[in-house]
Length: 266
DNA sequence: TTGCTCAGCGAGGTTACATCA
DNA sequence: GATGATGTAACCTCGCTGAGC
Image (cartoon, rainbow, N blue to C red; front, top):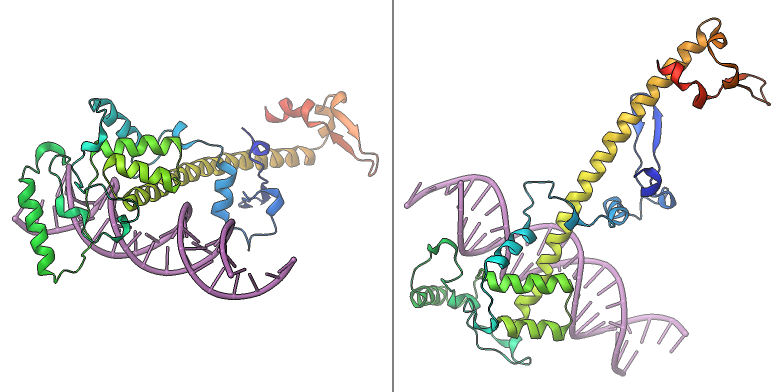
């Protein structure tokens, strides 16, 4: 891959003070209206995050983790048996009006390692009473989706990363979740994907920058070598005649680099 | 055709909670 | 058991878009 592949232009101004311009050429003078990070992403969107190994320990390889989980999950033809939310399936017109929190019935089944072996009823009742003690205020409760639910959502996300209302409802019914929960999961999943892609892009640009810096250093060194050679007397005596050309405008003798490079570098 | 309002949606950021080391 | 780090469900805000008028 080279700079042309990326449609990037590079400005190298002078030794020790080079300017790296990674904007596409067609928007070089429009930095005010263009989010540079967005531009970089658009340049690099062809790099599939799923094809690249995770570059940061901070970013979890969620997909891989879930895939491994899927492989461990026994086949469950009927996914409606999830008990994490144990909400009765709500009709489309009613679902948004429901006030009760799904967290009032947190399942112990989905908790990892069997640590959460507290009877489900107790957990539910204790949470319920605590809510009531809060004066019935709908404190934000959070639940963990079961592995099965996550796996199904993940599979669905692979097919289409956005949902139309019908797909949302279907998925919600299948997983025994509220449509809102499915919607939120997809929103968060898109955000995670984007974050991961940004990390990959950032890493790639960093490597590009390093490579170009190195190239710049090498070219500057070459320029210095050429200048020093030019200043030495009888310079052209070392140059094969075939490598010498006369500039028609200034009538100076120039060295064809392609033919003379081996001698200069050695 | 133009302008306005409104609903729906996605993105980005934040908060709150669960889990783990 | 306390604590900090991490992951993520849920929420909030903003901007965009299309429909209806």
